[in-house]
Every structure is written in C-alpha cells, then in structure tokens.
Image (cartoon, rainbow, N blue to C red; front, top):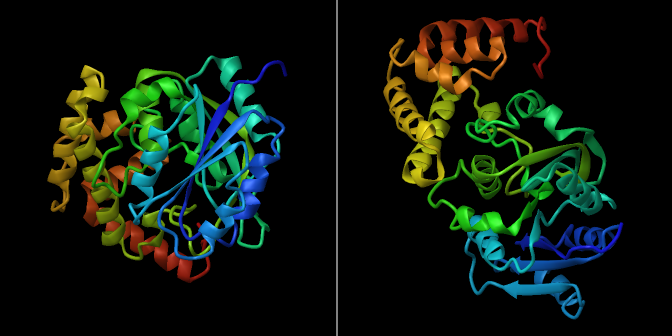
Length: 333
C-alpha cells in the first residue's frame, strides 16, 4: 500500500463492558495498521475501566478518563478536540470493524480526493447474528444519498451519515467544533457531515465495513422516533418537532451556511412553527417544495398532506391502519 498515514480512531465508552474488548481487538487487527486509538471513558461504573486498563500500555492506545459523566455528545467533542493527526475516524464501543474497514475507507478518500468518506453497515443483533446486510437500504437512505451526495442538501434535512463509518480530514474540525448544544435531534455525526458537505467534498463507499450491533442498551441505534409513534398526531408532532429544532440550530449557526441557505433556514423555521397548530395550511408551500424537491413523488405528496392537510392525512392514516388490521398490508409496511 505504500507508506501509511497515521489515523486517529476516536472511541467514546460508557458502561460498555459486554462488547468493548471485541471492538477494540477488531480495530487493532485491521489490515491498515498505522493507527492511534484514542479512548475517552465517560465515567463508567461497570467493568469498562478495568477492561481499558488491560490496554493501558499498548503503544497504539491512549486512554482518557472523565471524572464525571458528561454525556455522549460532550465525550465525542472531547475526543475531536484531541485529534493529533491529519485523519480521524469515529468509533462506537459495541460494534465490530471488518478487517479492511480502514484500508478501504482510506483508499476511497484518496481516490475521490474527498474531505470525508462514509460507508454502509451490516446490522447484527446482540449475539452477532445478521439482522440486515445493508443499514442504508433498511433505513431507506440510498435514494437520498444518490440524489444529494454532491449537493449542499445532502445532510441538510436528514442524517445520512452513520458516525462509526466516517474517515475525515482533521482540517475540517475548525468549522465543526464546538458541537451544537441543547439538541437531541442533531447529533455529532450529522453535524460533522453537514458542515463538511457545506465546505468540502463527501464520498460514499457502498459496502458494509462495520458490523453494527443493535441491543437494548444502545444510546444511538437503527431506529427512528417516528417509527415508535402509534397515532397520526404523534407522527406529525415528531416530524414537526425534529424540523423545528433542526432549523433552530441552523439559524443559530448561520455562519456555517451559504447566503441562500441562510434565508431558507429562517423561512423553514417559521414554516414549521406556523403549521404545527393548523388543520389546513397552504401558506409557505414553496418552502416545503424547496426542502423536499429531491424526494420521491410518493414521499413528497404524502408528507405534504401530513404537514399541510392533517385532516386528510388522518383519514388516509386510519384507512391504512384498517387495511393492516385486516391483513391486506404487511405489518412491517
């Protein structure tokens, strides 16, 4: 492969005793060997710190221990502030990295002359059994990735990038840090992806490089809050709440956006604030169009009805639920 650049791998841990050793070993056994694993433990009270202690003297590992729990966002921010080399990767404590993850990501970054590369994942359960071969297909991300990857709309509305697949250049951190605070809908990987897409180039490797473990203790996993909602009003309220908070963050960080998006941020925030209590509203439909014009026609019109014509949306929702109960539609549909 030639001379390898040193890559910093950032691992945030908290109460991770069950899977941590398997993850660390999968990183140390990569085909790309010139790495530095930087770990920050967020005040674990289980055996996590004892496990980390067994790696304390490893020449490629540097470990920090937080005095008290600061939360996963602040813990990742701490790690990002401690990047030492020109390239870095993010890492979750309970996954397994496939042996060529770093090598293939690095090759893609260089081939595309990108500032950040991300990949697909294979979803596994707590016992390591495959749930889905492709996370991005299971979560309906492929359409959005293909249509918006080279535009500034790529990470604008959705989190298309899963943080544990990222390989990125350190130079972009000057714009990314500090991470936005007081938001549960805009996590670190989404913010990294958004800022990079606005100021640099992103590339996608369409193959799994991580076994992405889903289990009961995941802090962030392969689920959507809207999937857990049971009623039409819950679904609509979650949809609007996410966008209200998202655009509130964007407006408070306007310096990151080009002028055209600065105007759209303010108008979109006002649009979602306005439609929440409405039973029907076509005012500002052009804002909806600007936001969702890259979507499929079915997604576009369905969500237009949900947001702007909720009474009609409720009727359609109840009809669909009736067909499901009668077995005419798959329970998973």
